[in-house]
Length: 458
Ligand code: SAH
Ligand code: SF4
Ligand code: F3S
View 1 (cartoon, rainbow, N blue to C red):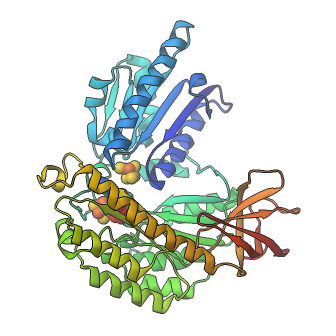
View 2: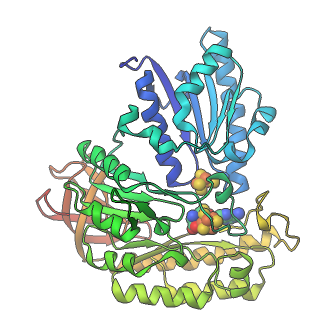
View 3: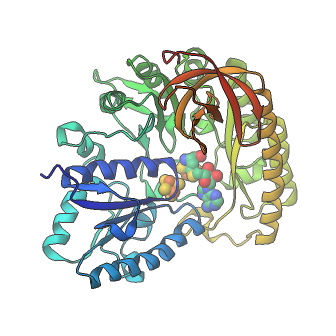
C-alpha cells in the first residue's frame, strides 16, 4: 500500500447530495491506493464521472462530457501517459453496458452500490485491459466495505459533512428513476453511522446532514437488535461530543412520524429546517404520480409540524407538466404553495424517464406550457423565499462558518434555516460557531455582523 499520492484522480459529481457523499467515499477508497485528488482532468490518471439520471438533461450531459474527456485521454496517450475514464452513479446503474457501446473510450462503469470494489476493479483493468461493467446490486453491503475494519477511514472535507444513513426507495413515484438506480430501501445500522460520525468529529466536522432518499423512513438496527427511527437516531447522535448541528434530507410526507416531529421540536442540536416535497397540489396529479397522499393531507401535516415547531423553515420539490396536468391542476399547485408557504424550494419541468410508470404515458404536456408554468411557480416561490429571508432581518442567531467569501476577510456560514449568511470574519475562522445579528437580506443570502465571541455556541 502506498501512502503518498503518486497518482491523480479527478471526480466530477452530478445530481444530488448523496452523489456528493458517494464521491467523497470513492476518494476515501482511492487514497490508500496512492491517489490524490486533482481539479484538472488533464492531469488525472483516473477520471470518475459520478452521474445523475433523474432528468433527461442531467443524463445526456454525461455523454457530452465524455466526448470532451476522450480528447484529453487521447492527448495524454500520445505523450505516453494513460488515463482511465469511469462512469459511476445513477446513469451507470440505469444504462450499464450501453454506455460503453455509445462511448467505447469509457473503461469502467459501476453503479452506486459497487464503488467499494473500486480497488478490485482497478486491479482487473491493470491485469486484463478490458472494460469493466459492475452494475448488479451485490449481496454484500457496500457500507461494510467502507468501514475502518476494512481499512477505509472517512476523511473530512470541511466543517459540515453528509452522512448517508438510508439509501434506496420502495415508493415508486410514477415519474422517478431512483427506485431503479438506487435499489430497495435500506437503513444502515446505528453503530456504523456512529463510527462514521466519530471519525468526522475527530477530523473537525461540526455539522452533519443525514442523507437518505426517504430519510425519515429510517429504521436502523441498534446494537441490542431494536430498531431506531430517524428521530431516535438524531437524538442519539446529538449526544456525541462535538456534534453541534444535525440536519437530514429528503423526507417523504408518508413517513413523517410524531417521534421525528417531537425530536425537531425539543432537540436544539437538530436544526429547524425540513425538506418535505409535495411535487404537486392537485389530487388527481398526486394520484397519477403515486405519491400516496392528498393535497389536504399534506396541508394538515404541515399545520401539525408548524404547531410543534413554529419557526420551521420549510422546503420542497415541485414538478410541473406531469402527463395530463391541466391548467386547473397547475393552479391547484399554486394554491397549495400560497397556503403552505415555503422558505425555499426546488422546481422542475417533468422529464420523461424510460422504465418508469409515467415513461410511456401519451398525454404529455407541451414543452412551452411546462416552461410558462415553471416560470409562474418559480416567481411565487422566489417571492416566498424573499419574504422568509425578510423575517430574519434584525434577528440574531448562531452561524457555523463554512467557507471563504468573495473578498478578503469575508466568511460565509449557514443559519439554522440553511440561509447563506455573509459576515466580516474579524479574527474568526472556518469551523467557528458565532452569534450574529442580521443587517441585510436578499432573496438568496443575508449579511450579518458578529455580536458574541465564542466558539462554544451551537
Ligand atoms: N427522494 C426524494 C427526491 C428524489 S429526486 C424525494 O422523494 O422527494 C429529487 C426531485 O427531483 C424530486 O423530488 C422531484 O421533484 C424531481 N424529479 C424526480 N423525477 C423527475 C422527473 N422525471 N422529472 C422532473 N423532475 C423529477
Ligand atoms: Fe423518487 Fe418518489 Fe422515491 Fe422520492 S419517494 S426517491 S420521488 S420514487
Ligand atoms: Fe440523481 Fe441518482 Fe441522486 S438519479 S438525484 S444522483 S439518486
